[in-house]
Every structure is written in structure tokens, then in C-alpha cells.
Image (cartoon, rainbow, N blue to C red):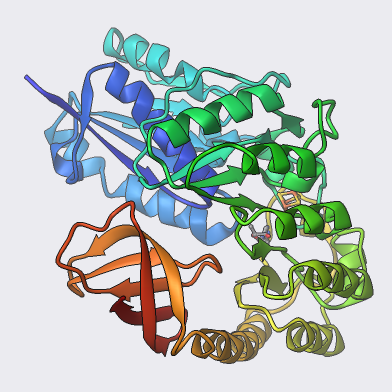
Length: 437
Ligand code: 5AD
Ligand code: SF4
């Protein structure tokens, strides 16, 4: 009889790709994917803890499985990823949800197979949280679910210790994969027909700082030089490590998309210093200038936090000013979330919720206005879209242009995986609509 798995993923692209690795492990054990959680023989929650709401979301969903588990005792529930990796959280999770069978962290994902086998022969929960030992596991066999796009890890962990951020605590010190392994993986993906490769790391620009063989811009060049018809993206870039060499490589190779995610976090120099970002707003603007000098049409996107401890009205205004100056193509905006164990968690002057809400609304309004202007620029243009899905509700195919904008269009053929020329007729927020030409 067939056995089924269901994976619930929270958080960033890194986690989405990690869920593909989890799917790979489960399929090796003979499980097949199923859409409905009720039909699953094993449910894996791949969690995130970057903000409190991501954590609460997971708690809510795990809580909802209590009844199902009572009715279906053989079903295995596993909780992995960043949430249980935090200090004391695995024990708390077990107390709160005693029906969870397996709890594992970010550094022992490859042992999930053993945990499942172990759990099948005992009643007690399997709880295993390991510390990072600096090793990199090669030989994952992810079951990729995002054709024609493929994600490739190049670094793991983070050394930056931005004072608000939990990532260095739950993902360990930064370590880079060997370039030959990365190149071999990308080559094989291209041979399999993948059309868009995204190199992933918390801070891709510092690739190699931990002793890898070449700097990031050289790695990017090597990947861009591979034969085949594919696009190349990378994320995330830390402004302090963004270099002119990298801007030149982006400009030189048509395969590299003119699109850069460069999180600024704040426009206030004193807040940036408190955040331990190691650049000023002027440094950031200089980096943007360097990028635009070499890649004038580059779409720049960013992350911004409002309500960091001690953020004054003036600090917030400085963020709005910077957003106006850079003119981001789009931005992810967040209210600061206090994360236990980080430096900022014990800073005085945590900002009240009502002020945070007002600030984020003002910021979102500005960002949305800029986004609309950026989208409107495409109206009347013919853009190349890599078709990635069919939107059944709209009855339209969808895919991104090189600048990351989602474009919807109609077609009689199955277009998934094709590069399609689309004449844009209409823009709506971050979405574009057009006709295949
Ligand atoms: N609160 C709010 N936003 C955060 N981020 C990271 N940590 C926090 C936090 N504690 C945001 C940053 C980062 C993005 C991935 O998440 O903007 O760039
Ligand atoms: Fe967190 Fe800063 Fe590292 Fe990004 S660079 S993961 S925000 S500590």
C-alpha cells in the first residue's frame, strides 16, 4: 500500500529548498507526496523563527493536528528547522505538543531517515538537536518541486550577528561549499532542463571568506560561463560585502539577471550602527551608485525593519528618505520582532506596537507607490518571461521577467519551462498582464 507525506514549510527560500531535501529523504523511504494533510502517513513541519509570527503560525498548525493524530495513531508528526534549534525550544515543543513524534534541528536534517526508522520501533518521541560542527553535507538528493527554477546552496550559516537576528544562533557559523561541487550541481541541473538557477546563502557576497577556494564574483562568473539556455540569480547580498567586481560580472554576462536583493534594513545611521550592519546610509547609496554605473537597468529590491529598539521619528524619516532616493523596485517590510537571545532583545526602549504599526503603514504606502511606478514602466514593452506555472483561477500562465516581476499571459500550449515573449498591456501592483507575441 502507498505511504504518503505532506510537508508544511515556513519562512524563506532557504527553507523551501530544505523542504525539497526533506522530500528527497522521504521519497527514498518510499513515501509519495500528497496534497491533503489528512491523507498523510507522515507530516513534516519545516519551521522558521526569524519573527514571532512565523513561530506562532507553526505552533497554530501543529496544534491543529492533535485531533487528527488521536484518530490516526500511526501517523508520524515531525517538527524540524529553525524553531526547535533555538535554546530550550525543543523541550518546550515536546511539552506543549506531546503527540509530536520527531523533533530535529537545522544541523541534522540528513539524519531524518534514521529518526523515522527509530520512531517506528518505539513509542517515545525522538528529539535530536545537534550543534553546528562546521561540516557541509554533500550528496543531498532534493526532490525539486519548482521546475523550471532550481535553488542551489552555496553558503550555510551567518557570521554577521545583526543584533536583531536569530539566524546566526540557529544556523551556525558561515561555511561555503566547494566551488567544484556547486558547479557540478548547476551543470547537472542545466542538463536536466532547469532554466533558472538561484544561488542561495544568507550572505552570498562573503562566499569564500570561510576558506573556500574563490570569491563570490568568480564563482558567479564560472556559473555564468556554463553552456545552456538558463538564467542566473543569487541571494541574499549584504551591502557591506557588495563589490564593484560583482557589479561588473553582473553587467558582463547576459545570463545573470539584472536584479539585486540588497537588504538595507534602515536609513538611519545610528540605527544601522545599533543593528551592527557595518555600513552607513551613505555607504549604501554609494553601493547602489556603483551597481547602477555598471548595470543601469538593475532592479534593486530590499528588506526594511521598522520599530527597532530606540528608533525615533527622525530615524524613521531617514528610512523614508533613503527609500525615496534609491527608488526600490519592491521591498519586503517588517515590524521588528524581539527574538530571545539576540543582543537587541535586551536593548532598552522597545517601540510600542501602535507606533510600529503606524510606521509600517506609512512605509508600505511609499514602497507600493514606487512599485506601481516600476511596474507601469513595462506597459507597452515586450518582455521575456520564463513561464513557471499555470494559474488555474485566472486561467493564465505565469512567470517572471528578468527583473523579477510576475507576468501573466494566455496560451493554448503548455508553456511551463519555456522562455516566452510577452507584450505587457497592464500593470497591477507587482503583477504584469500581457499577450504572447
Ligand atoms: N524582526 C523583524 N525582521 C527581521 N528580519 C530578520 N530578523 C528580524 C527581526 N528580529 C528581517 C530582515 C532580514 C529578513 C530576512 O528578515 O529584514 O533581511
Ligand atoms: Fe541575519 Fe544579518 Fe545574517 Fe542576514 S546578515 S542572516 S539579517 S545576521
